[in-house]
Amino acid sequence: MLASEPADCPLCAPDIEARAFRSDAWHLAIYNIAPILPGHALVLPRRHVCSALELADEELAAFALFARRITRLLAVTFAADGFDWTIQDGPSAGQTVPHLHLHIIPRHAGDLPDPGDWYPALLASEAAPLDSTVRPRLSASEHAQITRHLRALSDDPAEPSGP
Ligand SMILES: [Zn+2]
Image (cartoon, rainbow, N blue to C red; front, side, top):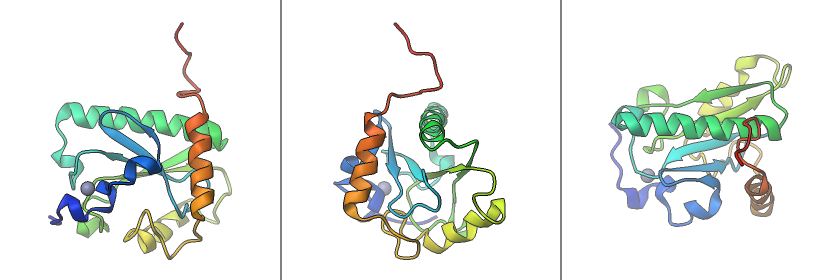
């Protein structure tokens, strides 16, 4: 088990809310500062937990439903026809930030030479999912611009809206 105080956790940082493009009472969705592919975002619980195994049943269900809502938004926005979801859960799986987070990566046929080529890039930069020095990095203004754009979009565009 990774040990970390929330005070040291980059995903519990005071400015984390300001970086989010969607949130609810339990979750945040943040555009990756160094996306592997366009639309690469992170979904995380507000509560500091290391592992998905620490979530109560209702928390895990809510996490998955929030992630699906964000995935629909990203798929429509980035015209994706597929997506990767991945959680590196535990140091043996490559987790270095001890706060549960799901990577959502919208995909298109032929976007990478091999469909699995995203994973080495993810591993190389997992140490700093919000501050990568490995992948090409968005500027602060570029990140703020795409965050504002995503905030302004209607939610669940694939779902019929209520009255
Ligand atoms: Zn945390």
